[in-house]
Image 1: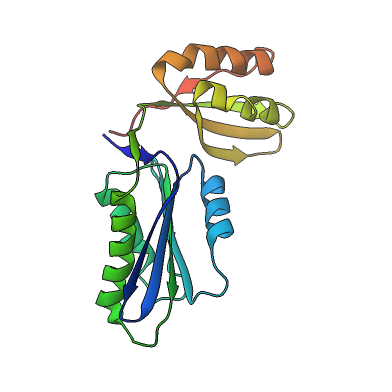
Image 2 (image 1 turned 120 degrees about the vertical axis):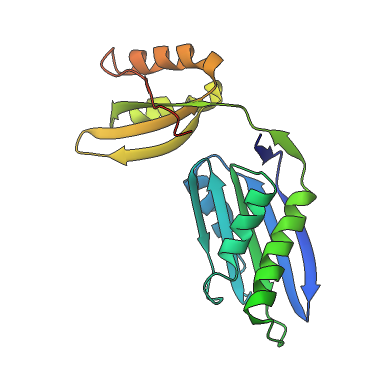
Amino acid sequence: MPFTLLGPCDYREDIRKSRFLAIAAPVTSAQAAMAFIASHSDASASHNCWALKIGQQYRFNDDGEPGGTAGRPILAAIEAQDCDQVAVLVIRWYGGIQLGTGGLARAYGGSANKCLQGAQRQLLITRDTYQCHLLFAELPLLKARLAEFDCLLEAEDYDGQGAQLSLAVAPQQQPALAQLVADISRGRAQLSLIPSAE
């Protein structure tokens, strides 16, 4: 069963004169993850490398380090710790000694791993994913109330009228969320279950 974090955590380590600071936080959307990364990145650092995982969605960035030596090892650490809905930023201040590609991967992955190991975690609620289409005027009305249903907005694909939303919600919350979608759209939109890929 996957876990998420109860709150932000960090871990610091010096490796061959380079300073590493790993910061992890729970996130419920890619936008929230990018906002967390942007607000915690340090412009004075040599590299601000990161990874995020939210359900089937994941991203990572090496921020100038050799390809595959930073972002991917951070993502591997998230997966190794069975975490989801998590973003991890690892900041490096270069100390003048080259670590080599293997050393970099170990440093970034190891810092992320130790950061997550020290974090307070909670079991993630099992959610089913539904989709619905709302008009532009209806979107803010729904988004403002998603937290009431402990509902995650997993994806939104815009078209000329509005957006097709993918919403993950616990089974016991689905009827109330379906009623809200119907009320907001005056009965036009309804939740339809997206079959699990498993």
